[in-house]
Length: 401
Ligand code: KIV
Ligand code: ZN
Image (cartoon, rainbow, N blue to C red; front, side):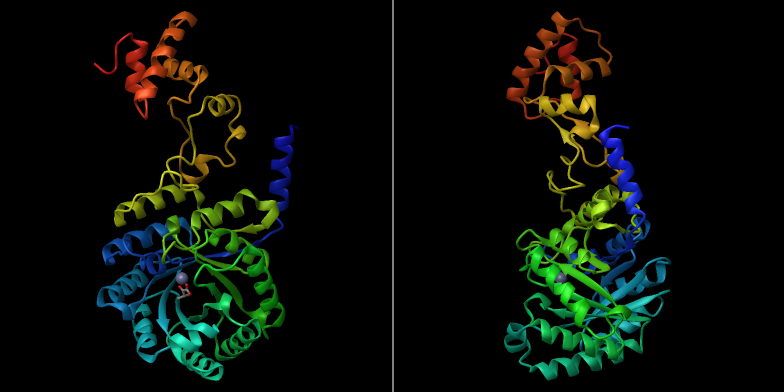
């Protein structure tokens, strides 16, 4: 057995040990809240079907009180989907809760996601409320929501800048009032992986009834750490992760679903965690989102960008032709993508020879030398050299004329 095969065998044996982390997709709520990503109800419904096929556990379909179209979107998604729990966002206000409850009526399984700020900054400047008032508002809202849907999630907005002992008080009260999922969002993308690990460890140790509820992470990417922070929260016992396709969301975005999922799958022995995601649907779902929002996926985006499995440099292409594992840590087909060996000025003779052969030409080494020289000159002038260009060069034709 080679070292790589041995690693793989250890990975699959150890990954059997793990638990299950729920994937809560908020592409249609937090994702679409970001400028440039808004979706009408038709777009949301298309995405919701794709998310169901992807295998997410919970779809946050929208914020019914935000607009009549968003109410209709949540309601249509609730009627159309069979598998995932359908969730609607609501502030801790009667009007929001009632309209979320009505929009969710047709759902097989419904969840209202309540949120209320708990940090000192938000309590003083946004809410103008004391600690006790915050707890009272949360408790009343949770009780009301629990009477109009199957399950209630409570989010302590700006949790990561909230005093940990107060957060414990809020969560104790939320559990008593009937919340079954407790979310500690990093609303402003402020923390580091070490800090979030410590907070989730503290919450699981100190919240009364912690074993009866699911702790959830919801990380924003202002410092580029949303995925790392989500994984740290999972390591500390979070069993729901809130994320979006392509990482879209407020400001710099939310944790990218495809990155969290593939980190959990690829590094299984480390996390010992399973998701129900059909990973080969990641790439098509990402492209559907780009299509319905008109926002292209950045080329260098992890997992789903055009360059995620593309290789141009000669050294890398040569390695890839000998063994894919040299420069790929995941199989592109596992995420619904394909490897591409892109020919450009950094490419070498090995890749050119392979492409020339694939295109049906048989050249001896002297002829290949000539084609290689012309190819390098062309690649200096053009950013990408196409198969048509190579075909022309191998046929002795000038591709630029
Ligand atoms: O970032 C945040 O705090 C939110 C809440 C509504 C959970 O999106
Ligand atoms: Zn958010």
